[in-house]
Amino acid sequence: MKCFASATVIAAVATLLAGCASEPTSIVAGPTSARPIPTPPVTLPANGAIYQAQTFRPVFEDRRGRMVGDIINVIITERTTANKNGTSSATRTGGVGIGIPGPLQGRLGARVATETDNNYADSAAQSASNAFTGTLGVTVVEVLPNGNLVVAGEKQVAMDKGTEFIRISGTVNPDTIGAGNSVSSTAIADARVEYRTNTHLDRAELTSMASRFFLSLLPF
Image (cartoon, rainbow, N blue to C red; front, side, top):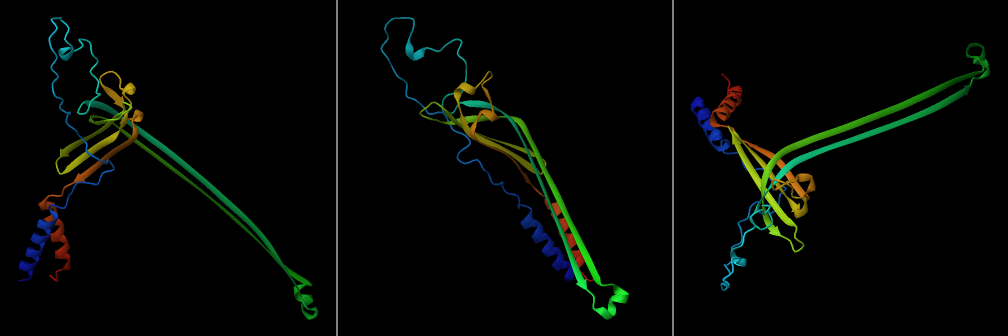
């Protein structure tokens, strides 16, 4: 009966924990994608000329993102380094003198003195360095009145039992978009760049863990 109850509990725990993985929280606010805004076609009367404004497309146009729904390639090159040093020291010196009564001066002398000297020194150093590189395609989700582009994007990569989430958002100046329709993440204002993972544990691993736990509690 005990074995049956333990097996039932183990199965229930494994079933509940098998779906424990959830999408991690994000610092990127707002949508990470946007569709182009459809514009109604403008029909102009034909004037008989070869050039028609409504159908003109530049032959050598530089295809850079500039409208809602356009895609821009972001080259992520984030590197941060921080150092912190601290030092403290203290010195304390003290002395005590005691006069000896006459009958005891023959043995102890006329005076007994003690001195104390305490020194304290402490130092600490902290150093942190992080690097995040990669390439991510983002979508223009809004065009501001001054022409700047609000962009956002997300990439999810599922590998075996885990999922990697790469997200970025910010504001891009169209003048910083270079060749290949790309821009560096260091040129994005109000940038929010994150890399997070979500690990899934399969039912076999959870059953093994629960089995070891309950078997350690059984009297046999």
